[in-house]
Structure formats: C-alpha cells, structure tokens
Image (tube, rainbow, N blue to C red):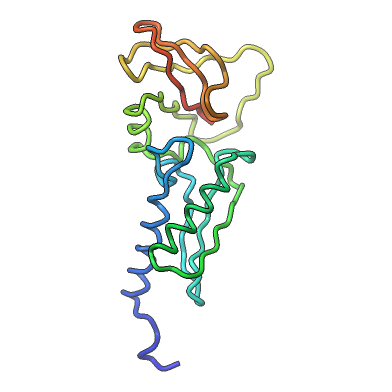
Length: 177
C-alpha cells in the first residue's frame, strides 16, 4: 500500500468522531428521551485497522431486554452513517451503575416526568439488606415534593412506582444501582 493510500490522522479522527456521534445518538427503546450516551452504557467506540467499527456497550443489568434492540439500533445508525462493518460487543464488567448517567440525562429524565436516580457512594461494597431498606429521597418531577414508594417495580425493571406526597401524582423513579 502506498503512503497516499494510508488514512491521515485527521481522516481517522473524523471517522472516529462520526462513528462515536452516530452510536451516541441511539436512544433507549424503553426511555426514548435518553440516548445510550446519556445512560452511560456506551463505553467505547473504535475503528480497527481493517475499518471495522467496534462499539462496546454495558447493559444496565444482565437481563435487560432492551439490549437486542439497542444493538440493532447501533448497527443501523452506523450503517446509515456510512460504516459497512460494525461489531457491537456487550461487556458486563465493570457492572453498569446509575452514576455513569450524564447530568444531561438526569435532567432529561426529570423533564420527561421520571425522577432521576440518586447518586451512590463513590466506591466500596454494595450493601445487601434482606429486611427493610432505607428509602431514597425521591422528589416528584412535577412539583419537587417528596415521593412515597407505591410499588418497588414500575413500568420497567429499572424503575419503581412512586406517588407525590403533595400533588398526589404518580411517577416513575429510575432506581439507583
């Protein structure tokens, strides 16, 4: 291969940026106001020496039913952006945490009517309790008043159903993991 046929650093950087932008714009099928970048499940995008775009995503939990759709949507977005060969890999370690969610994503959740997750401790073991658990300080996305857990399970496994103690509106809380 001649030197003229080798991609320039600028071309590689532009291609990488285009691939990242295409993948990052894919929305979550369960919460379509969030992108996979907002959620923090988009971990890496690279282009190997053969021109294959390699995308690494981490599921929110190991049984997340949205991952097949997200994988297909990432493939479609990258093909639409002009990339012929795409490899999407699911990586389970390190495990996803709601702390990976962007601040923009948290704001989008609240604007959509879902209380965003509370931040967890920066590191350390996750406490497992078999009895009563300490309820998080969940605020109503409509009026800001405290919420009361109605049901630990909401419309998806990632959410719990809450009711506002002031305006009595039901709302989802995106569980902190």
